[in-house]
Image (cartoon, rainbow, N blue to C red):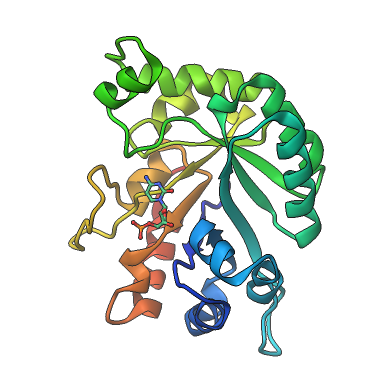
Length: 239
Ligand code: C5P
């Protein structure tokens, strides 16, 4: 059984706050997410800052650089190369950038940094997709599975999808793709502005490889206890 890893979203406006949050969560926080807000505010050095543990214990953290790149292949290849050089373990790009862009991302990221392809943003429903793509989209899950096939054939390590589509992606692709699931909430917690949320256990059961954990931990009155609950739930779930 493979352990499902929890990635803590460091959604704060500066490097000092990001490091403080990661340190506060202690050893259980061994994988962190740097998104476009923090990266834009703090600059590329933030990747190294949150990677290193300041205490004497434990190994460095892994960093997921969630930049959701979408550009011409040459530009994405170069950006992915930079992300790998910064020490990122995972990097996101948009599947809709197309095969050549996905292949360029994989080439640029190399062995040390896995490329994850965002399928359909969970903020988009069928109507919004239809408007953007100029055709009727009645089956969002079908689009997610279809885009996963494109991403897989381009050689990416995995895909990003909601917990509601993870099972279908896992059924179609087996172990050929890692699956990262955001929008995760502990039972009894608020959904915040997210609409389609799943518990850590449900995400694991659906086949997630990684879950992105944000406010359900970071805005809890006891973040360490909340992260411990997440970890326990992931360990207890069949995957
Ligand atoms: O909502 P929450 O605080 O858990 O979000 C954690 C992180 O996951 C945020 O950085 C958000 O941008 C990201 N996210 C995402 N896709 C979603 C939901 C959240 O990438 N569907």
